[in-house]
Length: 423
Image (cartoon, rainbow, N blue to C red; front, side, top):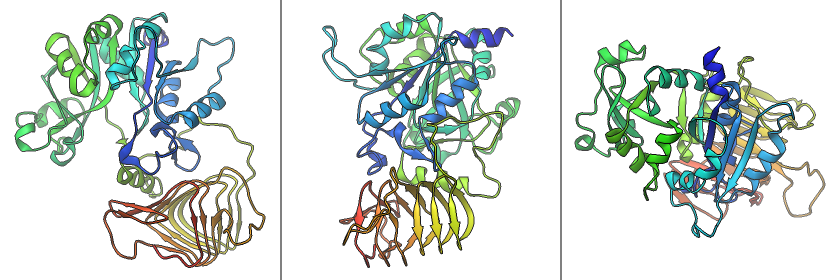
């Protein structure tokens, strides 16, 4: 098919993210796209897997901040055979004779790598974020791009007035051409006039109860249009490049109809996991026609002894004994002993570590512990009879063993919580 042939010639660029401060403390030791997700994956696995299924397997990953674990994951996971043109190549921020500074934003990152990206055969460049959750066949977006003879196509989805302040607002005409773009309109005055008519939404097969169109941060450029768009000192796609492109180029909207979430905050990260445990989950990883790929591990099956599990996602290699777990996601090699876990994410551990360390609690969740509405990062040691329940009801705060973000307790990587601690 013609669309499959054109898809093979698309060059994919994935933005590895900046400091990710809104995901702190999960990003203290790792880049945003390397943050664990759904028990066994990393966020970066989502766009890469979507691109592979879309027949677009020539990928560049632009990285800069806290990137060691992200680089390691890519090196371990994505190896294409010698008969394929596929690759995932890391382009880390670097200094050169012509550029002696770090990336200043998303557009600046692409600009400083433009020669490398355009040295690969192909007249189309697809730009993706490395920290979004969705299942998307990019060939559908490519078809809209080609049919409309666009210079740039951006993927959009309906959203409410409360949501649009966090995204780029897009206004389109009846043909789907973008006629205005406003990045993160903060209030009613800033978003005035950006509503889309119910008739237009209905004509695109999407619901009409959310009157705004939000940019998903997915951009498909003609290579020459990308060159022109970056022939300046603009630093960010959403704030600068796309609004200018709307004025000077033919920019088309691709209407996306599925589940999509920007994993940009602790709240969105937590809620995305809670979506996974619903009986009719709005997003899951169980479609046999659309596998999400990740690092292959030789782990034993999880061992469960006298445990009660309700609406739980359980990853491999875990050891659960005499515990009560409900509406939670339990990650790789998690060890939970005679504890209660409710509406929480237990990321798990890197190694198994079963020996006695004297006064230090062993890896995992200790006997008598109660954990509610929390995120327990990797390699945490929770002692006996610890209570992580946000007992004071704080919205935001921190202590010696934790931080609280929007009411959710987060225990950072490698933390040791002594017996009897109450959080």
